[in-house]
Each structure stands twice: as C-alpha cells, then as structure tokens.
Length: 84
Image (tube, rainbow, N blue to C red; front, side, top):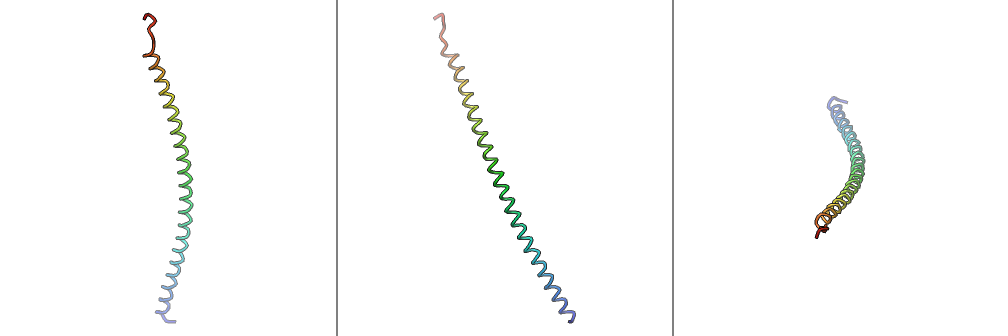
C-alpha cells in the first residue's frame, strides 16, 4: 500500500470510530434523559401532593379563624345590657 491509501484508510477508520462513539453517547444520553424525566415527574407529583395538603390545612385554619372572629363579633355586638 502506498502512503495515500494508508492516510485515506486512517481517516475513514477514525471517522467510523468517532461515529460509533457519538452513537453510543447519544444512546446513553437518551437513557439518562429518560431517567431524569422520570425523577422530575415523580418529584413534581410529590410536591403537588404536599402543596395540596398545605392548601387544605390553610383552608381549615382560615375557617377556624373566621369562626373565632365571628364568635367574638357576636359576643361584642349582640351582648344585651343587663341594665336595660
């Protein structure tokens, strides 16, 4: 073989090796992306459930506060004067 043929074969071999590496890298990146998306979805579901629980707890606390305020209002303004 002459030098030109060896150079051409070396370039082709390097190109094939690089393409193979990129193909494997792309496959690994796809798998990593899938795992990451699964973890994000799982975390988002957990966070949404926690937020819903906190919202419900806030609604309960606010309702209790409204009830106490209403009771105080009733006690202050519906109190009949015993002297009357």
